[in-house]
Length: 480
Ligand code: SF4
Image (cartoon, rainbow, N blue to C red; front, top):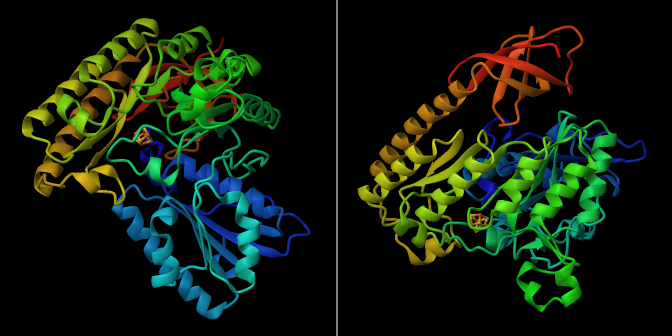
């Protein structure tokens, strides 16, 4: 699924800092944009470079190397990144030895333009070439522009333990798959992240165990399309049919991986993202139901409620099939939260199609969602084959209608929790008051409640839900 689309606006452009190593002499400034996957990648990159003599800094003017991890999903993000590159180049005038590199999706798409035509960067690294970074930096040190955008067929993060010292110390992301074979026509992922491949379960479990030992209480298994996870000894998902009988018989799918993770750390909360309707199996939903520590939330983007548009998007399911899936989820886990991604104004979308989207929203009543109006991404099938023909004003109005309806449904879902006692993992202080904690329940809703003696960040408490605002549940701790 388009993991890239789940974009947390509050952390865009944040720079990462890790614990300094005493012997490191050079300074890295690394800034990230886009989806959770990009932020997780920045940690991996910083971890690789820490072994190459770089400590992280938050002060741009102190840096010897500036990296910006980019996102190509939205035009606005690209503009922001271009502005940042101009700023980096201004700093370069006073620090001539400073090197600037671009990582991530935008790097892949604009590689030669950045290096050769505009000459605004020293280094371009696609999402699958991070292991090559030390070599690239050597080349750049020697005065060459470096480019590495090869879509590698092997794991890029195999033996690299991401360092996560800058996070809240409670929740962490664990990458389990890369790439996507689905070829949705609006999406750049298949081109920027390459063919789909899965990470070895043992290394995933080791990372999860290590995170638990370091005090983490919640992990999110992360991938563009997690339900498509399939480990059969390495190799691309598409080559599975050529695997040996033995490999096929011992293959690990996502339901098994989820179960292995839940069993390995029974006190740790397990989340996952993102799910694609055509790949989410009922086995996964049943595994969620079986283990208390697997959170009851599925991010299940649909993008449109119209069969005709779903087809044009090359989504390989119908509206009816999606409804059946939703019905099954609700039957197996009645209080499972479901969230969406939606695109308004995809090429050729009519008012009729838009109404289908509204009626789909009405049917599902999602807990929350990420909604966009269509903007063409260069390189995608839609950009090549379909004219972006829905007038901007129609796109805007349709998007506003979708958002308004989603707001109602989010409110409805929050209301449904009133009177319930929810287990909440405390993540920190409420933004509005130092007297209150904020955390999330299993359904991923934010819960705010007064601090009580003995409660602290990183602990689980039971909270009686007494009230809600438009986006937050309010309650108070109940003693067991
Ligand atoms: S191609 Fe489709 S399923 Fe794959 S990442 Fe993009 S939107 Fe998700």
